[in-house]
Image (tube, rainbow, N blue to C red; front, side):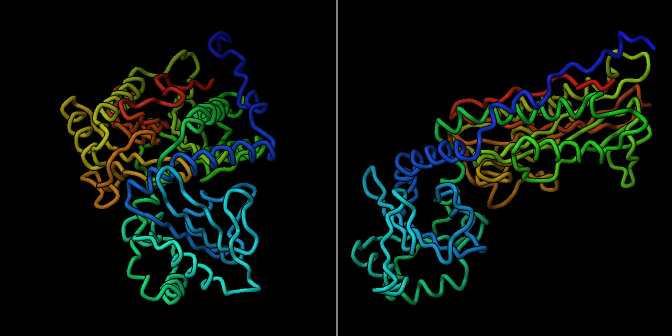
Length: 428
């Protein structure tokens, strides 16, 4: 064996980012600063855009509305007892009230005295005093994010409002627009989160973690999960690692688990930090003895997947729906001779987040409802897709090259938050 073909592991790894991971108290300060900016500058515009003069968000402890935690400051982890937020939109301002026993500092003025009136009586009184024309509540048929008001809470709200309940409208669109839109401070921080995700993958796909013929894909999965825990970030799904080889096809149901030389490895990794999620898929090749690079057929497959990313980016235009973007990207890719599949999702407060769905792996003709939402500026996406290609070095076997890269739609162009994979990781 030529040692020059198998140099020692030198990548500094994910631990080099440890100093950038803030202690909990500093995280709170950063997150709450972002939240204040969002409430003061973003929310008034969105309420006006969506035609919601007043927004009522109601949740009970351990049965939280999907939106409410994005509205509450740190270090809150749950809605306490019953939490009711009343947001009253005015020109360039939103009055923020909490019909809630404890209040939330200067984020939401506490306005309920339980010694004087019942909670829903207080809410109804405030609404009558302010007399809004429209009252948005979180009910809807398309988005889980916009349907968080439970049946029991809805019934009590309607009973308390009486004839004012005729002004209730769905705040489903507002929920989605609030969750999907990023402010500049969030966009400034996002690339570091994605860089850290890349660093974890780069370290996992190395000889530091993988010994061919010994290490299994499950070993690497658990290493990634433990690494995220050790770094102080929270995984939003269990990291996965799978493999293809000249004896293992991408659609094999019973795959070999032990990683061997000559295998193509693929991972899916994501975490939460500072209220934002990452979601990245990359690929690695395990060198055979005497090899210095991956077979050309695998490199060509990666090039195909990169080309598909380009077609995807070209199809994105502000105002286009997810379904239109999907159709244009797939159509142009197929004309170019690719064998494509696209299943991009928004990313942000949640992993599979609010915003236009651009295909699902089993719905390549479009996604009714969620795919009909238009593309807006300052929204982020996990550009998730794959391209299949026959590899001559593997006797013409079809290989699926899957990629996922987090990106920001500026309103004019798609910006990959920390670059994208154009070369396979090589494991010696």
